[in-house]
Image (cartoon, rainbow, N blue to C red; front, side, top):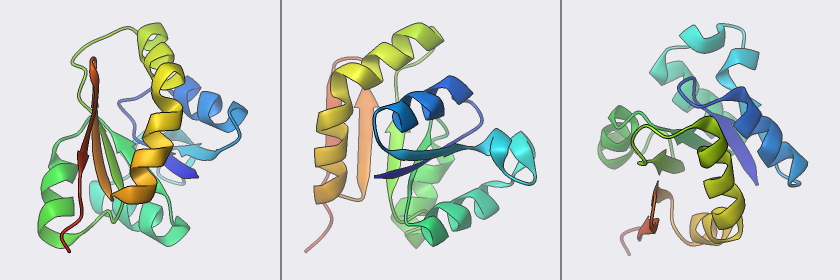
Length: 120
């Protein structure tokens, strides 16, 4: 699976996803870096066929209203350490991938995933 990791999440998360056998790019690796506008970031994720991974709930609204980005994983954990975040991804990565093959919008909290089923 392809992932595009937003600026407020650590670069090490993208590296971890790559090490787990997925394709991942962090905003810091894009031409405009961590200053990449949301619309550009969503378009990039869509062009790459990737899942945008973010803590930014504005993407939730744009996904629901305009289907941009087309595939979205919102990290809804509040403030946790980068180490705890990476552990959460390790513990849930198989479930995250499975959920994103069924639905275009998934939220991950401290206690599990919320899978928003796509309308018929």
